[in-house]
Image 1: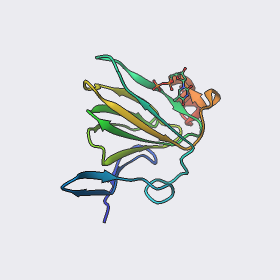
Image 2: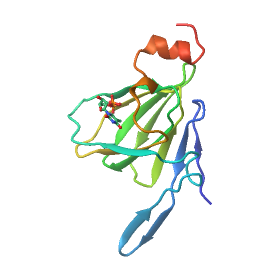
Image 3: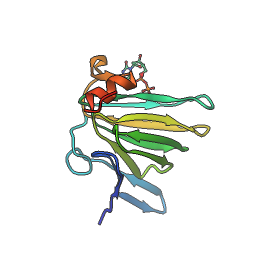
Image 4: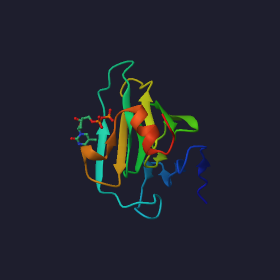
Length: 143
Ligand code: TYD
């Protein structure tokens, strides 16, 4: 049975993905609606990340995402306006589910880190909240 880890940030979760390993290597897979609670509309990945680079630093109004470290490692700080949690991702067989209205910052990327993102919607700049005060207001907290 897959055991997912609770994270104290609204609707965020560390998801343990299926891993099928044999002497040829390991294989993991993700099915919409089965391992993640949304249909995948878009996939993107971040790579060639310079040392000490910060990524993210925004929230989304509607978008939900699953973030996976395909190679190397990095940290993700999650913030729902009330609670914060820092996750360290270093395994292609684990994902971090990030709900909408969660501020996220990605940092501490190792050399050759590849961050894969499965997203519930196509790219839409109007879905981004790039200002922290605006995020707190959207999340229901006075800034
Ligand atoms: P951004 O989401 O700000 O990057 P990150 O959150 O990883 O730091 O996106 C960087 C740029 O890429 C920005 O100009 C928007 C563009 N972009 C797309 O065109 N399509 C996409 O699917 C994504 C994620 C970004």
